[in-house]
Image (cartoon, rainbow, N blue to C red):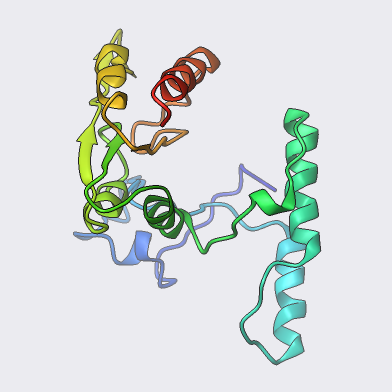
Amino acid sequence: MNFDQVIDRRNTGSVKWDYAPGPLDPEQEVIPLSVADMEFRSPACIRQRLKEVAEEGVWGYTGPRDQYYDAVNRWYSDRHGFPVDKDWLVPTTGVVQAVFSAVRAFSEPGDKVLIQTPVYHPFYRAVLENKRTLMTNPLLIREGRYQIDFEDFENKMSQAKLFILCSPHNPIGRVWEREELDQMARIAAKHQV
């Protein structure tokens, strides 16, 4: 992939570039950051496979093939030294569907679900629209960056049925450090969340 190639996506039907609230002045170098949308040309192997699928000419409902599971397992094994069992994977159409499904699968109506704010707005909807009780662990700005308030986190985790972790955290851009993840995991295990 060429991360240096600038792709002008204006006037292509892009929600991010053509339908963003308010007009974008083409003379200004404004980069809309409202939608998680790729600004890079997809790799040639993906474009080629899409062409092959299009040429088949018949499309119906499909599920992931073994190659999908093999690729995920290979990536985790190569990257983290941790093999992933096929039965652990639940393919979804995207993160929003996955979060909604996780809330329904791991909690019941009325259960308390903890999120860290500010956070991607569908996380709120996943809790509230599934009739769960929303709890927030507001992130604090310390030394110029967002930090977890672990005292508040532990207090809320003692009451929660489910915690939804956003990592990297959207919209703040924090990639949680290993120590932070370990501390959240210890607290979650302590409270059986």
